[in-house]
Image (cartoon, rainbow over the protein chains, first blue to last red):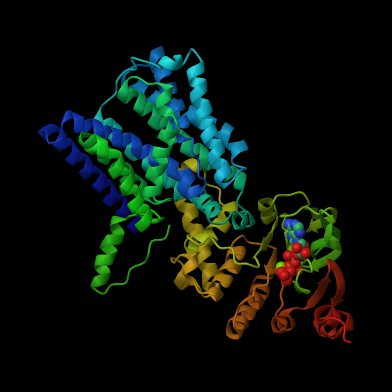
Length: 327
Length: 256
Ligand SMILES: Nc1ncnc2c1ncn2[C@@H]1O[C@H](COP(=O)(O)OP(=O)(O)OP(=O)(O)O)[C@@H](O)[C@H]1O
Ligand SMILES: [Mg+2]
């Protein structure tokens, strides 16, 4: 491993641990109430949702509107698996989560292969329809609990577990996107014809990106199911898909750090505005309109926020040459 | 026959009534540098699209080193050893110059999705190998200094060069250049001619290029092929071709 890469890894691990320590201290000292901690857990889930949608929307450059559908498949898989009580406790939680990802991923492949031939608005509409079809089917069948949904899912509200699952998910997605496979996906976003003429198998990589995105949406769904204990299909409607999409667009399409930041902000702000309930949606909408007016490419655009870049910039001020990190 | 890189036999394509290319025959031997010229709309770019699998010919056959490549997808044809550039520059604008080349090297990389996801040994090994190779190519094009810039931040001439560099990164046998000098000033064109000669002489890559700039065509091509209304009008030594009355007529129209 190159030395500078090692340093970057160390710094990032350090930052994550500091954040975790801070949150733990806040929780223990009572600065964060039980209610605040429930929002923090929601942030963990939404961060995974936003970053996973970022893979298709930001990195692959295809707008899809059915993300909540994949989330629901994950949630139901995990809930039904937990209900069988084959494996209980923490182990069951993790296995259910992986199963949830796999099931959502399989749906991702099945839906992705036919649908990804479409582009732009057509793709958006068809994925929206698929999201709704999944929801209707879940309500239709009995084994999913029908319209009542599923109750009494074993609760898993351990903040540390959820925090580190989110960190791991984001890291894995980011690693893929900065590997050769991710480069191929970015190349497709930039120019499909040129990518093809450079030897990239478009169909394969589009399906892969879509599947990866679905997998992690499934994982987030599993976390959600265990966090809340009760799930119903109506929660996973197109509004939920739109919410996630807004997080990605606001953060800057293609930027993982942007998606993390905006998922955090867009989870915390509406919750804190709950006391001004009637103005909540107005403020929220205004915020979105302002960002779109003044930062149409999203908060971070396509760029990633690297702490090392900040250090480099500071160093530059003292006359040293730095190399731009290009992803 | 042994050193024949490309052979097109009676190739044609019909776009719903419009015969864009007809009876196109071309054989290119290993190491040749050939020019494809002709007035606007003659079907030159269409020939490239046929060879690279963007369009499937309605007639004829195309062989690369004796292997039939008709019906293959564009990304597969790159694997067989044909790389191209585009008339209107097509770069990966928001990727670094280096990553533009590394995308092209993807087809020869082997590490798995998991290896990339969990940063296993294969990832580090291949990434650093490919980076070194890409930097080497960039240095040949005198672009090493731009490696970490976004592709769209380069000047027009440099972007054209980067497109050729990216095509080279696929490690081709045959290079197809579609109007590489379009929009370049004379100094840039001179530089480009040197680059094309370098690719041929140093790496022995067979090149077929479309070009309107006669100075470039006469300066470097060994053989010319003239296309008009989708058909071959003339073929041969560049000096003879430009004095061929048929060719002059095609370009300038019939003298009154
Ligand atoms: N996909 C297509 N569908 C229909 N017609 C097409 C298609 N592609 C090309 N053509 C037609 O084929 C003819 C040849 O076009 P082509 O782009 O190959 O010309 P060219 O020789 O490259 O010209 P230029 O010098 O302007 O680049 C034109 O009449 C064009 O309109
Ligand atoms: Mg053309």
